[in-house]
Figure 1 (cartoon, one colour):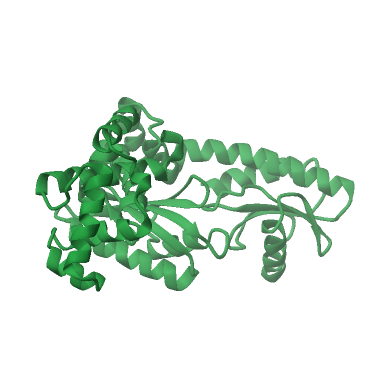
Figure 2 (cartoon, helix red, strand yellow):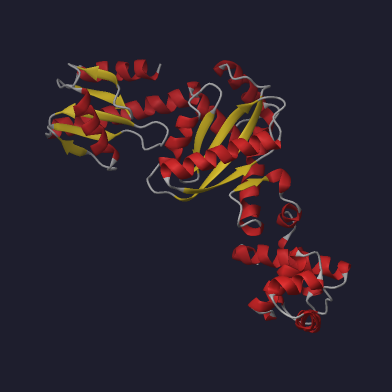
Length: 362
């Protein structure tokens, strides 16, 4: 349908500009043209030139420019000739076609519709009315995969990999959000559990790592039973990423349903966190603990407060470990050998780590 709209523009513009020109997509397919169609290899040459620049390009006797830099739909406008008239024609067609495309996306594009749901840009009534117009099923189960790009080797490489993995644009939607980050809205079965969703996330992670050589984190929200729950699931996936980056640094797949106490800390008011730290560390700040002491504490917690096993793993004498625990008690007023005080200390360390990772919140 968009090609028909583009062709209408080109036909009208051809009455003004007596030139050979047209519009092609990111695959080199000519969607609309005035005059004879140019060779496919030349189209690809023009496409490569346009994509590498944000401005108008003169290439192989043609004037060409990128109509849109959205990663999920690139279009170029090409005009035969490199004179001023060709430049004017190229810009005029690009502007007109961009306006039509924007209207088309708002009215007909299902991916754009899903993006508006995630960003909470639609009222409940408008959401269901629009879903009926676009023939989008409102009552199927969908999973949200928030793919946060930490390091990308090539621009849009991760997007292309994920899009190729899930080519069904009627059921699966790949949406670009916040720079290079991507959200996959995937239709799943009603019985899809956390293991199935986790396995799917692992498959995505492995494929992205091997094919794009990029580093990503994947946040998972709860499975949405209907279209009204998608926005909440999207927010959960975002929270999973934020909380996981602080408390689960070694993990690349972060599930909102498995965040544990980290999710609780994330939702606490900052002032309350600050007061809690001051209350816990009355005798001295947690900052007074050196790296060796922190390592000792972490190992002690990992071994369920077992002195013998902790000293063995740290390669220190049992009495040395007891001395260190006494030192911690003198500095903080908390005896980690007592279960209730150890719990308080563990939570305090997590609160401090969270605030430290988000300096604007301190």
